[in-house]
Amino acid sequence: MNLVIQSPAPISADHHKTLVALSRGSHATVVDANAIRISDADIAQRPDLDVYCGTHRLDYAFVEAGRQLRDFGLVAMDMDSTLITIECIDEIADFCGLKAEVAAITEASMRGEIKDFNESLTRRVALLKGLDASALERVYEERLQLSPGAEQMLAGAKEAGLKTLLVSGGFNFFTEKLKARLGLDFTRANTLDIVDGKLTGKVIGEIVNADVKARTLRETCAQLGIEPSRAIAMGDGSNDLKMMAEAGLSVAFRAKPVVREAASVAFNYVGLDGLLRLF
Image 1 (cartoon, rainbow, N blue to C red):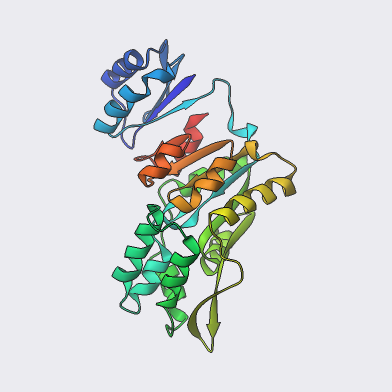
Image 2: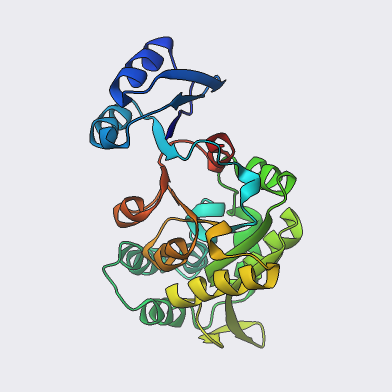
């Protein structure tokens, strides 16, 4: 196996030597100033790497030798706190003075403490009843930011021939704007009910929960004529776990512990463009 080590800052020569020894690899190859690839690494050394890399704010990933990004056909991404830095529903709630209440439910749901995502979303959206729909545009214009490395990751994926899917338990107001802005191929998200310019506190249609996310990944792969094993799925919360389990490679991005433990790869420190350095 190859072992890819990445950091937000340049990786020192001392780290190179220590990590080769720690992983029982044969040698290290410099990918760039912030990443190295160690050949013939021993996956049984994962516990020691966990400690060392956590202490030094390094991300590591075991990758099959010879695997290339172009071997995949689709990269599927969660939106809130993955492709973008915010939880849109929490920021919307801030416009009606309920951010703390809504954020508490969001956090509990992402940690997996609230098992029923449909219930979680329904409770949060109900708190938004009566809010002027213009708050959605303000959140997009004033607060929404892409996660570090997002545009580079998407450009690299497209260059390698991958299609892109943004699938979110959030709202299609934001996914559609991001689709147009970033040139994404597919999106799926929830639709807020709006009457006379006001949020009604309800969602229209099927809620995009964990099962729907997984199904959307499978359906998109079928549309592209590829197996889910040729998909990459990126997420941060428990609502992403089933989608990530369907994919051939799963990436936990600055994720909750339950998601980091289940994923093929975890990026705790580097940006989304860390995906490009794995191959």
